[in-house]
Length: 126
Image (cartoon, rainbow, N blue to C red; front, top):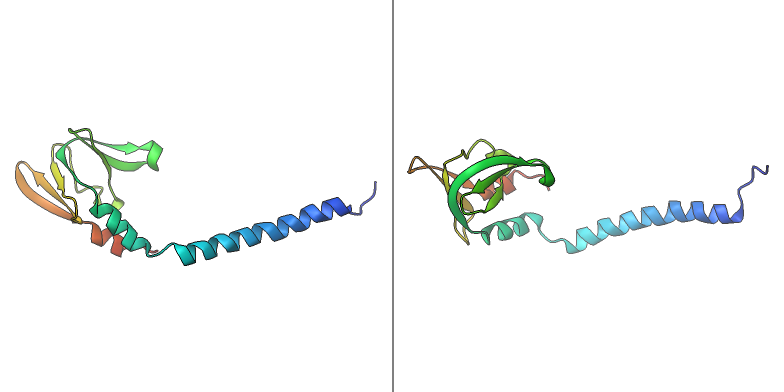
């Protein structure tokens, strides 16, 4: 057996050690240049949502990173941010208007709380 590395093996090794770091550096540069403001994008996306209804059930969605999810009687499902896990209970009514960044919660037909998405985004480490 020859302990020397063949020319073909050297090419493969060099390609692995050169291509992978170059690809990773390219991805980092791509996101740094073209990603824009992530927090602003999150606020824009949330402001476009609109839902209203009574909470039918709350469950952990295993297919979505085990996030706590609210299922409304209208059939709409909304994944809660961890900061909001204990804010909404079954039989609460929730309301999110398009263009707004807040969710209003009503409990026993009375106004209960406001969840402000700006507070979630402000606390993210992006």
